[in-house]
Figure 1 (cartoon, helix red, strand yellow):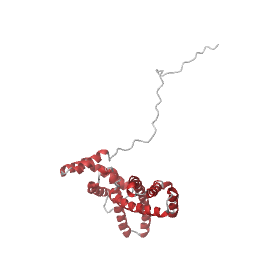
Figure 2 (cartoon, helix red, strand yellow):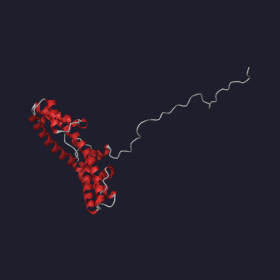
Figure 3 (cartoon, one colour):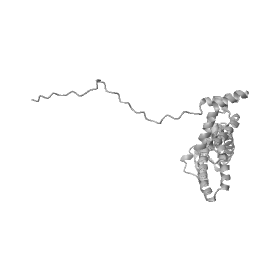
Length: 255
């Protein structure tokens, strides 16, 4: 027999195993929001006040920083770097002044958040500002360099335009859904209107772009004749133009 004895496994003085800490998955916490619900409230209080000193205090302590950060994010996100001023800080100041001018145009009772409204009007302001300054720069610059810059600007404009149209059509389809019975009194007209609105909603998955093919598609969906489709689409086109003008000027549509 062996005289060796079995050795007990070494312990650290505790028989309880240490708990396994699982790593949490998911995205990292987002940065602190700068345009909070309090900013909406502050703007409403600013608009409700007739005391200029009180307005100045509300703006300085509760609104100015949110406007500054929004201006900064719009400039850098969409690369609005064609500017007349010497520094981007000066450009941010100009955008903040524009926001201040537009404060009275925001109507909270229409259901639009302040962040959404000022993002849209600020973006539209910077598009015009940027494009005008680009044209001035192009007139003075070397033609070859200008052509290269124009390609970048054109692509930026296309991307921006796509997003703007996408946002607008989402508003437009909601408007049509809620106002269909006001716009069209006859049932067959409403059928066509509903079919067209469905096509707008499914636009990203739609493979038909030919106008004639779309008419046939709508006729199959509704069972109505082409003259009815033409009449309804003409009405919708007028509504579309009117609402788009409203959207570009105010940043929202009164649903």
